[in-house]
Image (cartoon, rainbow, N blue to C red; front, top):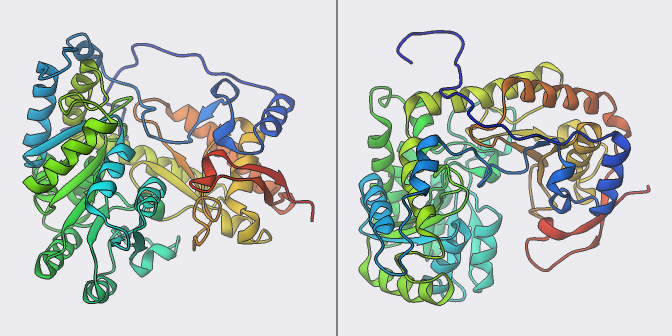
Length: 449
């Protein structure tokens, strides 16, 4: 917006609507019991406000729906791939670009091709699928967040940064690959500064260690650099994004986040030797390199979405919406990670439920209570997702261009009611769990003692 108004409005009009289910408390209780007290196992028709994830859950624009009709479904060399390739190349500068069906497919290909067993991969904080794909090939995932990331009340502007002193020690001991997750999802959706990206890149270059970005939320990270980091207020968002990508040897990207699409992802690199490995592995698991597990229409939607994601009015509205949500929760006494990130509000379950020990999953207890109280589905990011987690959080992720201010006000009211009965909320025990990514499918039961 050119005028300086206090109120930042949605930079779009609503063109189609979808009914949402509103269940009774008794029906929600039955649904939670039937799902083994795991919100991933709930049916969508039992959820009123779905804040489980911002991955693939957004509303596409009219331009994206129009692009969908132009999809070229040729098996090889389709014009939709060329359109996709041109946009990604222009935004990132990377010459070897491979579409995949979503971000974890890019992570899997990367891990299986360039990480031998025993490899060490450092990151500001690995998210769940990144860590699992690394560990599946026998490599070791090491998190190096800055100290501020462990303090939910610390309002430092770039709590997503990597700890450079710890990185120096790790490089001296031997590292196979360094990564930065933009924004740092597992650490509260916090952004990474350009200064930190530059410093990590320079250190890796001196040490001869390749450097990758997990760039799922690259546009939101670019916005926070623009808004918070000195020297970037007058730099265009595409230029900031390009500067981030220029510092890396490769990147993975889930187009279900800042691609504003319902499906899709990208694996890209500057290295021709890696590109050959990626291409061969992609053919085995995803498809021919010019479609990578996607329909041509999906490639068209991603191409449009990647450009829309860098529009200043959209990102200003996006960041302000999340900040408004966080302010509302704090106002009713629900502690959240500060400062608000770009895609979600993270509730501090450890602080709200101090009577529940980490091994009884206070984050899961809070997430279940929010669903039972008002049909709000979030996700635990604590000791259920990460057994060694330092923080016990609940992420309420904001689907892009989906919910209105009234929806958010409703969630705040639900959270206020849960806070009022916080002392009576019980923890959980695991009844059954898989060997990897247990939070997706574990069955739990309320703790009796």
